[in-house]
Length: 304
Ligand SMILES: NC(=O)c1ccc[n+]([C@@H]2O[C@H](COP(=O)([O-])OP(=O)(O)OC[C@H]3O[C@@H](n4cnc5c(N)ncnc54)[C@H](O)[C@@H]3O)[C@@H](O)[C@H]2O)c1
Image 1 (cartoon, protein in one colour):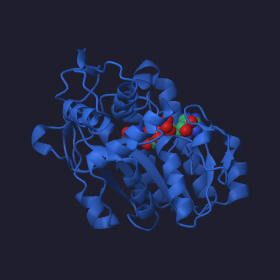
Image 2 (cartoon, rainbow, N blue to C red; image 1 turned 30 degrees about the vertical axis):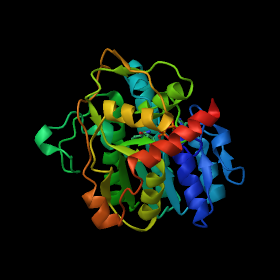
Image 3 (cartoon, helix red, strand yellow; image 1 turned 30 degrees about the horizontal axis):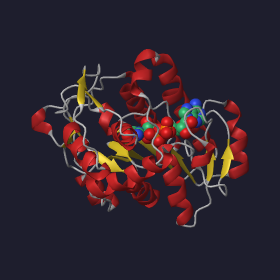
């Protein structure tokens, strides 16, 4: 798998190992951390854009490619959209090309439901996979773009795929610079009893999914969901202020938030409809928000 030294990928790598699969990780450690990876998992410290990745495929001969590596920072994509597209589009395409050459059975691609639907029509909430795709950031566009090539590689080169469009993922090991890292930022600041700033009004909503639920989605995608894209969400809309209050309760934190300017390109309301994933993958999120926040807070408190 790619991006296995990152936040979500490292949990998925652990999950595949726990299922008895042999796992190798390609990660250039540009955002990930070797310490996230179980030492028994082989790490190829490579850039996914590297043509010499051929050697890794020749050596490991994967049955499945699970592609988590990405330039995953939304503001960074606004600042440098060419770099974002280079990693997310050309890097992904390099992997697809190799998946075809080495006759990989399935390519699991991690896309972003939080970024690619943009600002949905409120009447369309929770958004289904059929909702209009109109991202607000270069990151959303680059995540969407690779989906088109997946179709090409399935139709023309017989590479099967499943796309998982994640909502806002939170949990232990999240970097505080990542997309939707609001939970990690709040936990870190509350653990240090520092003031917390909410960007915008706090009434903007998100669909928060615990990282352990991503693991079960990837495990399900090993066998199911051929040629389809699935929202990986809870279907529950939570405002940033509600999340702030829940995390305050978990942390025993008594300070009121301050409010800063809204972030450019931030959507106001988003929540994903996960019913297709339930029907086709047999998957649904199971971690209640409060319990997930407890696990996440404990991790960040122990780090500080
Ligand atoms: N965190 C979220 O809420 C969220 C939401 C939707 C989608 N996603 C997607 O999930 C995936 C994992 O995200 P994450 O939050 O764990 O981010 P992350 O930054 O922790 O993980 C990404 C990993 O990719 C690696 N990487 C980056 N560029 C690379 C390159 N050129 N070559 C090799 N490795 C490279 C990084 O070192 C890192 O380990 C990404 O594809 C991201 O777009 C995340």
